[in-house]
Image (cartoon, rainbow, N blue to C red; front, side):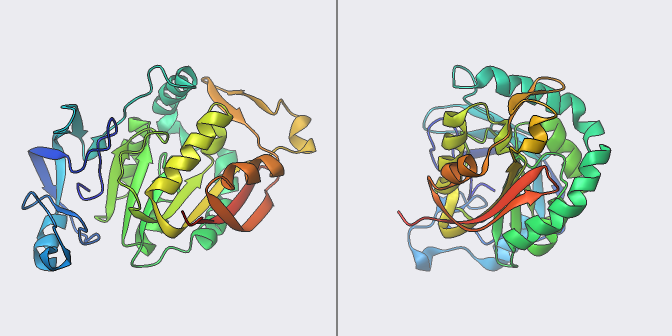
Length: 303
């Protein structure tokens, strides 16, 4: 993934890699576009691009443990169990306390999450609809924001060229990785508001039941801006989010906390559209999925 990663502190590209251990994997991701980690060189022009055979050799090896260092600011980030841990910048930012609570809750609940009965029922509807909105193609690089324990991981990995699974819960990522052995998946611990990915890197983005947990309008808007930044021009964003309705007002507040201190806010139709319209054009919206969610397929607006 070094061709895709930037420093989360200052967005310097590329990062330096120190390898401690590797494992062999089966799979082949996208040919690198800007930087060859194997040769440690930036491509100066199109004629100076990568060699596909060498790329294939590189993609058959996964870094199990190591370190990533930013040569600009000097910050060092660990690679552990094949997960690049580039989480940065939570302290002192808007919603930091709520994010820390959720991260701890997600870590502690990771092993039980997949067994939730309501989630299984909802997933039977949500996952096929999400795949229909996303429409991943064999040439796509897909970034999943808030990938969690990997409900959609295998489906996306089978359809896309390469997928980057992003979450701030390392326990959730570790569980997802243990369930999905596909060689065309990269694992990245990061904050959705400070994505350590370079501009215009993804063909498509995916986010399922994530943005409602971002604490406040400004934090959600920042995440929308970051999502658009890493998405290629005219790229596709498929998203699902809690919906506000008269039904849920009978059962609880529009905004509150789940067990373990996980913040949530149910957005009404207008709030959902206003959030997305900052950076995207909504081409299809599904206002009601199982009385619980709303979904949309969006296209990144031209700059």
